[in-house]
Structures are given as C-alpha cells and as structure tokens.
Image (cartoon, rainbow, N blue to C red; front, side, top):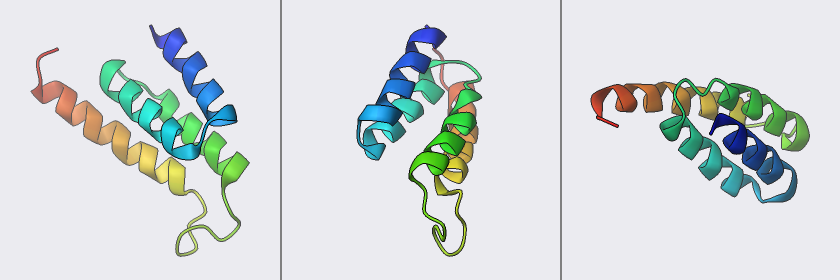
Amino acid sequence: MRTVWNIGIIVSILYLPWWLSVIFITGACFFVPKFYEAVIYGILIDALYGTKFGLYGFSYVFTGIFIIIFFVSSIIRRKLLW
C-alpha cells in the first residue's frame, strides 16, 4: 500500500498541478501509518517549484506545510478508530 502511494505521489509531483500533489500527500498521511515521506516530498516540491524568496522569506513552504499535516494527521489518527 505504501509503495502505491509513493509511486502515485511521485507521478503527481512531476506531472500534475501542485495542489493535487498536496491532496495526495495529505491523503497518504491519513491512510498510511507514519508516512514520514511527506516531509521528503515537501523538500522535493520546494526544490523543484519553490521560489528563491518564498513566503515572507521562508523558502521551504511545502516542507513546513507537510510537517504540520504530518503531526495533525498523526494526532487525528490516534483519536479515530480505523
């Protein structure tokens, strides 16, 4: 299951708009336990599509977003019964 999510996310990062990649990575964080790859994909998206100046001087916007999504999804996963 993890391999299918990883292949789908890599394809979405390379060929689909960024917002679809964010949706896929968020879904993977909720459905795959301990999906640490989300942070690596954030770094990859920032390296491929990030700007030099970023958001208020922070150039690792997607990395920060995926770190937050990872922690929030792990908290929500603990509270829900899957």
